[in-house]
Length: 198
Image 1 (cartoon, rainbow, N blue to C red):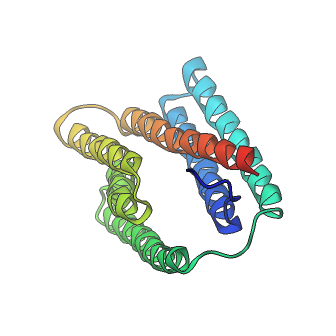
Image 2: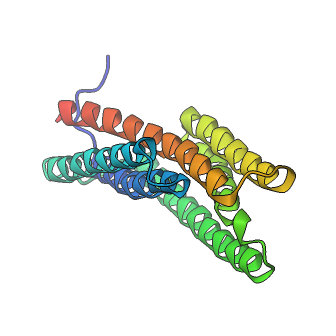
């Protein structure tokens, strides 16, 4: 028989934190579509990314507020899992930031600045693989593969074709924003299930 106990506050706050990250990154990646110029499609996609970010932030606030009525305590197994997953998440997130900083510095310093955005996408995609293990979610594997392929494709197109940097950066931004928006949408739906259980 399924448990009717309310979810722990830490779960609601964890999803809320993820939604804040997806709001920021969705708006940022979507705005990269403007590298293609202020065309109606690029402006519309940027606006959609901003709208998605607002939805994600509103859901994050709802979860934090609902968390006040959720129990603070986790059982021993959940406490240990939270401790380990939090530590691993922090390590992966820090490594991602460090790699992005180093890669951007090297590429800019060696006159290959046009590769910065697709390489960032590549690093972002790769960081989702350990996240799939940390959070035990298959979705992370799909997003990891998608964004990694987008980053690799961006690098190859720049290296092997006459496509301009702005063209490549625009479609890399669009493709990556679709991934972060998908992740945020998943979190919104999961958050709704939590809210209904309170």
